[in-house]
Length: 268
Image (cartoon, rainbow, N blue to C red; front, side, top):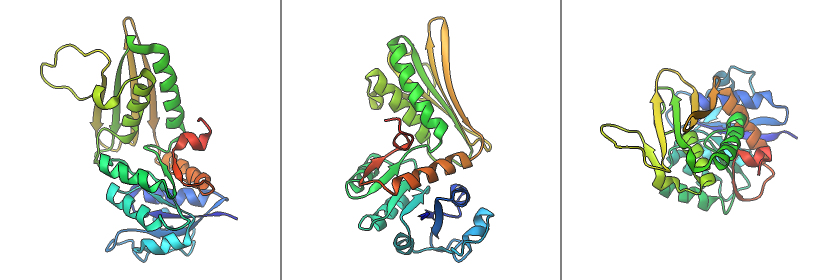
């Protein structure tokens, strides 16, 4: 029996990709689609948004309706909206996949509190390639140690509203953890003016926002006499959508807790 999946934010850039990714899988079916009240997509057949065949699912503005009809809801929207989705689903048997980034510490605390009562998939990036890249970064950092400076450079399209990207921050967390550091105290976000020499054990972040770049991330390990660069470049948003739907199908059978793509790929 195909897993019943719903998409919140169905008319957004990622929402449309998620609808298309569901249609590709024989083990999943679209059971609901929703968007914010007043949006032009309300009342429209979801297939119009994805360019696929009609499933008879109409976009609506009532979260409780899609919760009732679905086993998993996939949400790539905004922190406040994602928390509203969790609130709507917390006392049901519906799991939630969250691809939203930009949560502040208080919002993250709320998200983790929901995970004690329901299964939540929460990852900054649903690309299988990025997940493997994170694993490579941890291994590289442990092997190279403190003799190599670490810089993280990320680039996204002009419409992205948070910086650095959630993926870049996750990369920083993975490297810092492997090196026994706390990213909150060792991160440097951009440089300007006379900054002095680079402080030992810092991790630098540089952000680019331009054009229609889908997502480029490079972690630079620079030592004396050599540099190592580990890079991931996304060329199609469907990469993220397919990974998220793969995660949703996996999450449908999990108990309450918070999971990420490493769990889906069996890397833990």
